[in-house]
Image 1 (cartoon, rainbow, N blue to C red):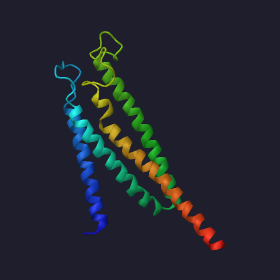
Image 2 (image 1 turned 180 degrees about the horizontal axis):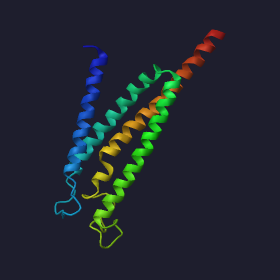
Image 3 (image 1 turned 90 degrees about the vertical axis):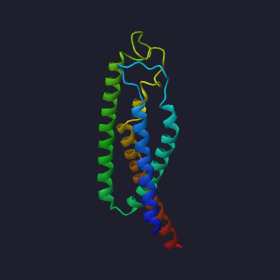
Image 4 (image 1 turned 30 degrees about the vertical axis):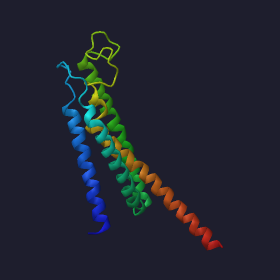
Length: 168
């Protein structure tokens, strides 16, 4: 097998494991109308999910840098604009998601009538604020966004070093 094929399979496996972790966290998060008596069971899935997700984002970043170096500057700028628009949309959707969840919970942790009163923002009812499809996509968008900039820097540094070599 070629090295690039093995790398692609590894990246897809990390993505699948990350998605599975996000789903397990979602399934083990208590819905607002229900009462939890067992604490935050989703913590069991968070550590491996974060590790798989960060590895996935790192590999996506590495792959995106290589891909960015092969894209023309004009297309790269269009892609950067598209990623910024996607990030802005994802931020608005995430804020709406959080506001909806807080409304369903009856307010934040400082509200006496809230289901999460005195729990803090990280508890068995709010896991999905941090682990959901929106934050998953935000990580991918940010990873690709930073890779495009690092790809630009890498290309500029290589061009400058080639100019210096040619002038000597």
